[in-house]
Length: 115
Image (cartoon, rainbow, N blue to C red; front, side, top):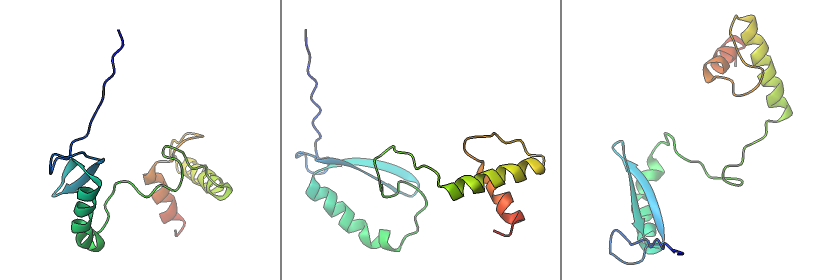
């Protein structure tokens, strides 16, 4: 027997059809709300004056390419990474040949090299 499940978003504000789920946070608490395009625009417009004067602390940044796509390091980034790895080893640090370099090591390297 075949089944078909249909998920229909309902606008949490007015009970009509919702077009999107909007996420926001205030006072350290994160919220999501399902809204129509009009209500989502109203929410964003009402928050715009505050967002325009606020400092960003995290969250997503505007995507410049496909979601989930990883950025390939440039040749200069690879050279910088290799220099950091060599310096870290000379300082007695244990670091892998490949993969992400811990931020703490990057900071130590920059401090040691006036960067």
